[in-house]
Amino acid sequence: MINDTIRDLRLAVLIDADNVPYANVKEMLEEIAKYGTPTFKRIYADWTKPTVSGWKTVLLENAITPVQQYSYSSGKNATDSAMIIDAMDILYTGKVDGFCIVSSDSDFTRLATRLREAGMTVIGIGEKKTLQPFISACDKFIYLEILKPEPAAIKKIQSAGIKKDKKTAVKSLNKTDKELFKLLSDSISAIADENGWAYLGELGNLLLKRKPDFDPRNYGYTKLLSLIRSIDAFVIDERDSGKNKLVYVKIK
Image (cartoon, rainbow, N blue to C red; front, side, top):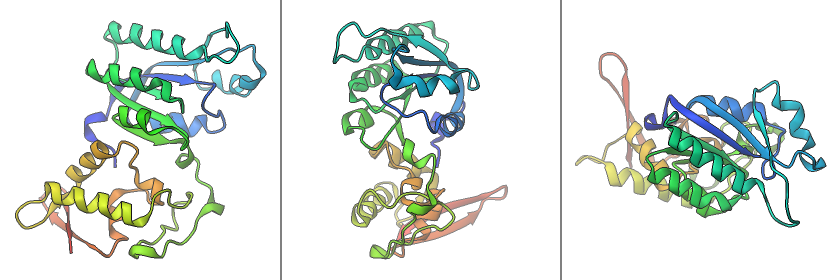
């Protein structure tokens, strides 16, 4: 589920080529397009290094502007400072509503925090090795691994009454079923009315606030409703509001 508060944004997309793979850049840009329009698309690296040569073939076809940043000393990531400076310059232009920081480097934690302090929406994209501080500093964090599913990785999940969605080919659960159930049930309880019902749209928003890297695709489902349907501990009520149906969920 996409949070309505981070839809249709003018986004500055800043990519750290040193800390993310280039293999699924197409899927990454398609994912970003769900949230808004990239006003800036820049990628940072020392392009004289062979380690980032794979990126060069995809830059032109995706209209990403490469920014050269030489490594002035060994063992230091020079792209960090270049991205941070550019981010602040873009912030003060007033031409964007949010930033998409593509990196698995937790050194961008302070940048994400500063941008949010300035009223910007911050979406992070990185690998599952990304440390929690950077994930928590973003409004939403998306794992690169779920953007290019691998059919061979599908596994049945038999514990806690949760079943794998065969239509979505993703890797097996990263968290235990018990932790997922607690996150969902606690969130439902927090916003439920006096009869125990919680509106699904509001639930999706709360889940992102509590856990920025929450995404049904992490568990093998394309939608939050599909994930909840798979758990026997919850009840779903679809109410007709005239134009469309409103979905509510409740703990049994």
